[in-house]
Image (cartoon, rainbow, N blue to C red; front, side, top):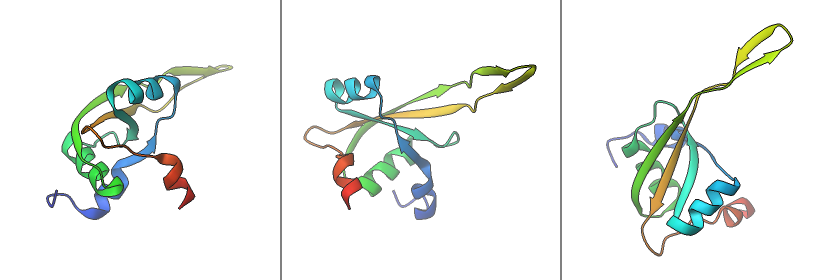
Length: 103
């Protein structure tokens, strides 16, 4: 964990993903889903989650999603690409986002 700068670890996690699928995954597999930087690595993500939320991480899976092509009249654009991390916590560990919001 000491291999990564503390400043970098605070930037790796962008936001938790709160959706129907992510809550299903959280209940069934004890995983939490985060949007992360596109150049973040699995060890960086693991270190960031362990440092910020004071939990133990069992494994990390990542998913790269290509941005959709969208049109607005004649103009064609593209949404940004996105990387999501599915962080599997060790048994008995959990992250409560509502308690963190209250602080």
